[in-house]
Amino acid sequence: MSPHRSGAAAIVGRPNVGKSTLLNAALGEPLAIVSPVPQTTRDRILGIVHRPNAEIALLDTPGIHKPHSRLGRSLNRTARLAADEADVVVFVTSAPVGAPRVHPGDRTLLVDIGKDVPTILVVNQIDRVKDKSRLLPLLEELGKLRDFAAVVPISALRGDGVSRVLDEIEKVLPEGPARFEDDVITDRPIRFFAGEFVREPILLSTREEIPHAVAVEVERFEERGGTVHIDATIHVERDGQKRILIGHAGEKLKAIGSAARRRIEALVDKKVYLTLWVRVTPDWTDSEKRLAELGYGK
Ligand code: GDP
Ligand code: MG
Image 1 (cartoon, rainbow, N blue to C red):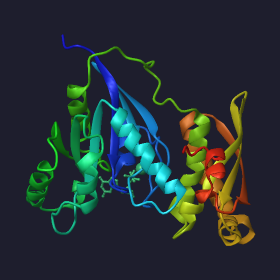
Image 2 (image 1 turned 30 degrees about the vertical axis):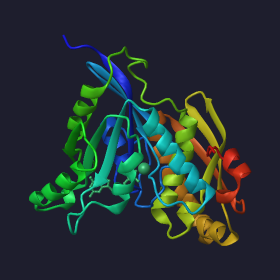
Image 3 (image 1 turned 30 degrees about the horizontal axis):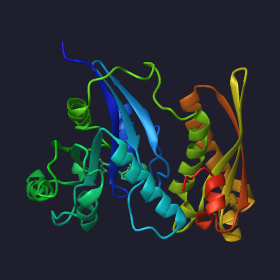
């Protein structure tokens, strides 16, 4: 019989390559929020994948980018730390639609991120590439940048290749016992995901600077009988942003609230009462104190 293995795999890469989509596909549960907006993921999110012979603690991380604020710098630190501490790095890149070239951001990241940790290269979004032979020169060029333990082309969106990524992770994990109960899929409280699930419809339905100016603070999370009562405040940086989020006669906020409520109900499997407020908290993305208050580390 093969030995039981367990450990942490950090999913890292540039923004928007599909790291959170990969986590969700691996878990079979849409735990991490996903949107076309860079910096959607602001925290490290742990998802536990239970396999017959292995327990994989998959860490989704913020995309590493050129930071323009304290929040941005904090996101980069979060991702680097996760990579350095993991047993395996899952480096995700996206298949380029145009010329099959290595993205300059990938070149920079592969120089040092988790450089002493076994690394699996995942080339995502191959559903967007019609002629798969175009991937070969890219894979070859990437292969020169690091000695990868494995290279796996996938489509996280369609779920293609995801179980192969897990197989490859399993191979390089150290031997060890399971650390979580069979039915546990994350270490974060539901309360955290309630805040994330309020942020998701905002990211999906607003544009330009608004997604980056929004933080959600869950003020109350109470289970009573079969129902969950949640009060949350949406922080924005300016008055105009607040007006947009509330919308004409409160329509916009109402739509955000219903979308979030449905998402939370699906996770907790209970009826949810969600009350939302919008508050202007000037410059929270650049204030150390406010960032800490809103739960974004140093
Ligand atoms: P992250 O920033 O790396 O976590 O990326 P997300 O998981 O949030 O995904 C960014 C965007 O890419 C979203 O709009 C996803 O729906 C999309 N996406 C993710 N994986 C795939 C894929 O395999 N194929 C395609 N076509 N789109 C994808
Ligand atoms: Mg993400």
